[in-house]
Amino acid sequence: MTTVSPAFAAGVDLPAAVPASFSAVTPDHPIALSQDSGAHPAFRTEWWYATGWLNTPDKQPLGFQITFFRSATGHDAADPSAFAPSQLIIAHAALSDPTVGHLVHDQRIAREGFGLAYAKLANTNVKLDAWKMIRNADGHYDVTVDAAGFSLHLTLTPTQAPLLQGERGYSRKGPRPEQASYYYSEPQLRVTGTVVRPATAERTAQRTAAVTGIAWLDHEWSSTLLDADAVGWDWLGANLKDGSALMAFKVRRSDGQAVWAHATLRNADGQVTNFDRDQVEFTPVRTWRSPRTGASYPVSMTVRTGTVTWQVEPLMDDQELDSRQSTGAVYWEGAARVSRAGADVGRAYLELTGYADALRTGRDEGRN
Image (tube, rainbow, N blue to C red):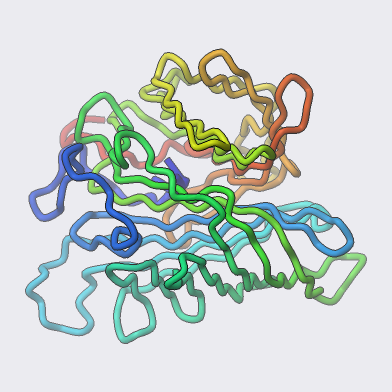
């Protein structure tokens, strides 16, 4: 939802009140697709976030993540200079390969301009150097990432209609109405393409593999998000084997209690059920401690939505992403299996933020 995706993971200081220079998210402006798949530069921050599970010809599972962020800096829009830093484009990419044993990832950041970095209007078309995510006329996405140590060349093809989160795409993230984003998802995307896998101690050369799989795409934009008491969030996006799609998140206080929580379940027949704060619960089952940052993450947990409890287990424990060179955040974001009552029911991505350090959440001026 960067998922709440990750992506609140842009890590940019966001004020609790919407600055006059940025547009506000309001419930009376429903999302309209496909034109809203493009960029919204009047809002402070925006991201396109694709995650998924891939299968190689030798039946080895891989997880992948590619996120593009657009961040408006508040620089004077009247500045005519081509070098004016009005918009920043940031990108993260990661591959979860159990044969490597830890997440491999890369990150980029640049000011928008000169055709080298941009997020275009009216249709998803984002680029940072040679990294690209482009939505085509028939709705499929072409993703190209040639990163340090790995590459992703993928096609993501819709099999279902987009899922508008919250109220027609107005998604609350806190107790105050302005603490919200515009948010829609595209679950159950069919994936084809190729992946260049990293070298390992056993295999000193990179390996190119044809892959198939399933993915989830989130697109969000906002100008202010988290409550002053929030330190991070837990987020789950799950493609279920029966064709259903589950999204759930919890924005946490420092004591682990929920500032806000929400979940959406769309059944294979298209019926959507929303769950409010009291109906959503994330409960840690097992933690993993990072040998690099010392942060402990609840990588295994249960997620309750209404009367149903889902079990979430990671593809591998070490899926920590250190983005301090771009967005300033360290968080855990990884491929996970979902089961229910002991039966395997789906594939997901789990995002855990604020465990290494509390995220900068845009506290009111003068408050700590």
